[in-house]
Length: 116
Length: 114
Image (cartoon, rainbow over all chains, first blue to last red; front, side, top):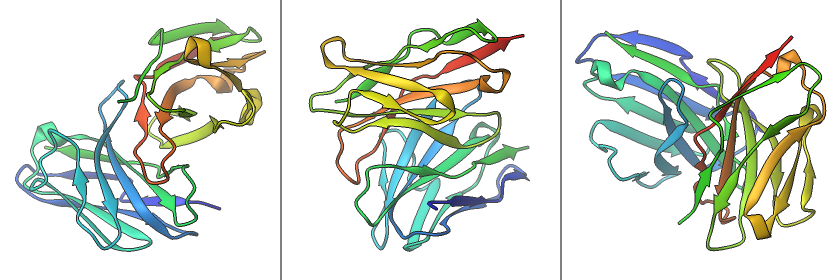
């Protein structure tokens, strides 16, 4: 149980284009999802907290107009990197917390984004 | 505010030797503590968690960790390292609020020498 998937697992795009990454909770409903960014050999950096049906809460320093987050249902959150640039290349990981009130986050497998 | 430090960005042990990965936390409230493992190009897998019950927590793959409030530590140990244990390990802290964010430590890369 408690499986989180991400799609795509990797993507290459050209500079200036937009990329959408999906995060799905497959066997539970997630009222809250988190988006993280991870640079090589570094830890996870929280980008934003996404609650179903409301606007995402972004961490300080994260551009909300560049990283658009939508949490339209209890099983799906999307992260759209708009007008991507090479510096946006990174590993993006989502996690989800179920509606049962558990404090445990379940992580997706991550999406490797490369912007050329 | 909560924070996590992990002493040693890289640890090497011989196969069969004791694994000890250090984690210290800072929290203004009783914390929830976690250890996660990450293999290359993969997401995170929960090894174990402390949630104010028993201070010695046993996790998967033979790992365990002990919560020591007086030392604000939550070190991860395994009696005998396997080659498959080579990975990145992250300690994390949360204040226990259901929908609160988790703060991750910088990570420790574990190498196992045959």
